[in-house]
Amino acid sequence: MDFNRGEFTINPQGIQYLEGFPTIASIKTLLGRIGVLPFHVSPNRPFHSKILYICLRFKFQKMKTELTKQDILDLLDRQAKEHQQRLLESDLRFDARIEKSRLELEASIEKSRLELDESLKKSRIEFESRHKEFDENLKRSQKESEKSRKDFNKRLGEVTGVWGKFVAEMVKPRIIKMFKDKGILIRTALQNVVGLIGDKKYYEIDLLLINSQIAVAVEIKSSLSVDDVKEHLERLEKIQKVQPEKINMGGTTLYGAVAGIIVENDADKFAYKHGLFVLRQKGSIVQIMNDKAFVPKEWKVEY
Image 1 (spheres, one colour):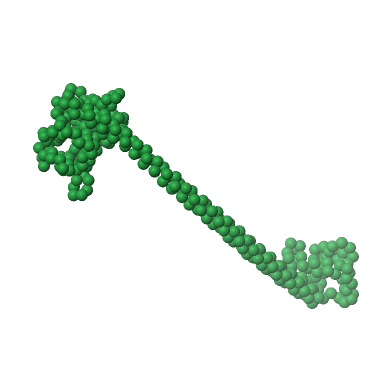
Image 2 (cartoon, rainbow, N blue to C red; image 1 turned 30 degrees about the vertical axis):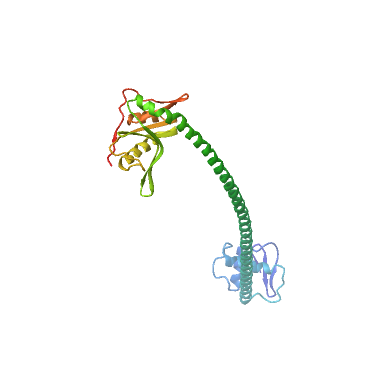
């Protein structure tokens, strides 16, 4: 018997393929004859696609016996088992890919660890090299600093000698006359006078001018600054409280004076404002620069 366009023939010997692919109608009629398909056939349903596949399996086969319902069920069962086998094989392949990825990741991590260890090793070697170089440079700098210190001390000694010469030859010989011209009579000029508290030096006076009633403490700087003037004002307060070593200044009136070869930032004006005499070098001589309007500050010494 032919079904729908003569694509299949059913006879006692089985199903025989005639031409082309089976249509939905022919498959429905065929399977309905053997009691397999009690519902509507749709080519979009997976089960129906399997039925189509089953039919195609008989495309080039001759059936010696009639195709039964059990034959189709057996075929479906075999297809399910084959599908299950394919799924299992797919899972195995997936597991193999996962294992391969894991091994590749472990290998990559190990490679990165080795590279990091190598980098740290190189960094440590480089650090030790630089540290050694730093130590060598430090030792060299210390030697150079020691040499510079010695050179500085040598030059300081030379400057001190020049400064001592300046005080001895330019300030001290003329200072008694300079203050006499200002109405202050001085009998004695002493250098480097110190005041002590116990065994500790409390102050030092570069040049102390003194008689029985008046004393003038002179601070002499190569470069006179405002801070030098402030420090000397504090020194005068200390002299008023503590008597110089081996010198009796009790009952005298104390004045202050500052002298400098170079004067910084109007330090001379600051000293003048605070009642100190200002001595400046002019050419080859030293002069008191305070004018007639100047009123010196007095510190009364009572020991």
